[in-house]
Length: 398
Image (cartoon, rainbow, N blue to C red):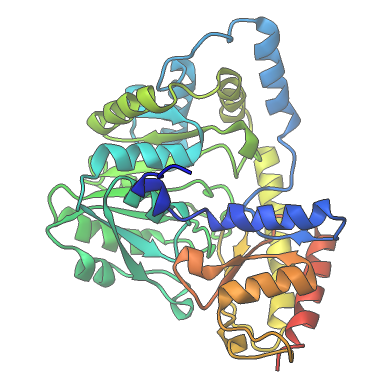
């Protein structure tokens, strides 16, 4: 066998994808596994969006390579969306459409980060942030918000973490994995810190903006002075149940957007033509299906919260968005069922998969080894059964 590059050898596999693969292996063997590990809506893409894609195919005009940053009319629609929904003033030339928000973030990291540059990551964080920073030869600097603060870091923590090497800050709101939502006041305080430091940029991941129970989503880029410092990341996957269509996008200062287009031109070129037409339909249609999905998640959140609070030894807060819980399970560390001793969240996640046939993801992958992430993007029936199994299995640990 040949020698792999240090880059790939040092890269960690995505924990969410790895756990989903383990769950699928068991399912393929006939085991009744309930999967709460992937961040994927359990709804189908709304019919009108499917119809938009079918219409594009039937028109026969969208079979050639699209422009690298995306079709002009889609970028125009995204520009309108940013203005009308987020109070963000990005011209179509400042928008780049990519193969999912993950590629959007990768493009930004490769375009901004030099070897040795630091990127401050609000922790807990989505698993790919640190991997993408390291691929760009940057150094992730984690600042942690604990469960007692709804997993939200403060402006004071950010100020203390900034050094002359700090190039960017990345966070998500609503947050994957915690469901936490930053308020306007909290983001204004964070913006004050950013604006004190020249050439410091914020990558704001807003992919879950439509699954927000606070009544108001706020974008940090809309704060005065932050428009030239903010890269806003969004996409179609979560709010429109379009994970498989792979359409993400950014709005950014023009020089960054141009750099991301240049990077994407070498990596993948444009996003799928038909996926883009489906996205255009979604962004130019009423949001009623999205609101209905969000309402279903809201109801499930109440259900899962009550079931989690009924499990002894689990510490849980009430998330304000997305479709995840991130309970602290450290009370079970050091406990045993007589044959297996649980030492950490990774071992507990595997234990739940093997004993309860429920897949969750270790919090270690998200920056908090005391927690596990479980998704409630599943039917109420499956959620009730999964939480019942988890409760019964954890009761075996003494």
